[in-house]
Image 1 (cartoon, rainbow, N blue to C red):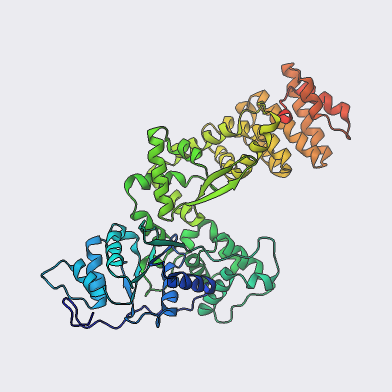
Image 2 (image 1 turned 120 degrees about the vertical axis):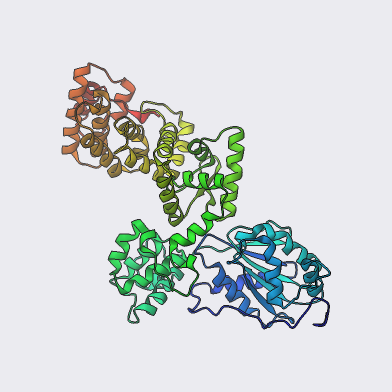
Length: 532
């Protein structure tokens, strides 16, 4: 169609934002996305991901590499300032230089203009006008040579669409301390590059490589977070930056004044996504932030108090949060099945916890979280058949961070003297079978110190002492084992209980003073969960 066709005026030259910094660590993604978009059967490619993953920056790099591939041009449409879906068509028309003809709908005018043109549109920040996805479908249907590249925190859910999740930057291998290997990580490369814009003499050295690695790992490779952290090197030593990452939303501020407001602080970037949620989705998002290290749908139901029809609605809300890149769907392999799991990036979870505390819901949600995991672990004197043991251990391994969170919370909770020690005793076999001897001993000793006197029943204190003694013995700390065992036996003699012969045999050490330990186990009356 010529430029003299109805509704058309002279097109504006393609206007692309010129990035003020270089693209670091995304060369493979640029090449792969470019190739995908050029595939004949791909008409709509949507770059999705959470706040701060660099979707816009990646889209600009992809578009730049395609500049000469479209005879009629490649145009960038910034939708960030728009909240009304009805304005999307007008925004596209203005960029293309298409005038509203007045005698037909603007969408029809756009379709007529694009019908015989070979061009590409980059639609940036589509998540806030996602209900305008139908417009994109109409334009694609009427324009065979049109290609569309979209950035959005959620997919458009169109039959035309190919979704392209944008992951965080790759991180160094967890076990490496080699500066040469650490430097090759895209996340570390970005940190170094941005730090040098503030402090030109900054470099990765043998002395600071592990610190830089740890900062990038704790920021989960999120480009915006790394950029905001790197500018702090002008003021703070790396160790100080690392130490402050437990409150990353307070630390990660101070982005360039000419960047969008939502990119000037990490909190603003996440708040942008949260503000686009419906009120019931916001409530579910806040509640899910209590989980540490991930969760199953079963756990989400218990904490959000779903069930039956409510559970169906929760599944829909959870799917929506996954689509909007606020929750990630993962899979954790167990002995018998693939258990669907979900998680939040720690940056997003921290924001959710702030909102949960401010809403006044924190205590209720935290208690529901604790009760669920208490039930998951089971009773301290419970029993499992051998064929279920591996499944139970694997499930607790997957939720190890959640169990730690419950134990920490119980130290200050109103009924923590009951919940924490009870859970610790029930976790005895898990710590023993998986070799977490030091962690288990630490919790037993913390609870024994935290809850003295009559805050613990004699049986509970005997259980804590006895299991602490056994783990101490397993570590070869025989002196501590003997002391703890004697204290447990003393409580047992007061109650006059006898331990079962099976538990006695399970507890009996094979190499160290078996008579003494058999006597302690019998006299303490403490439970032994080795028979699970």
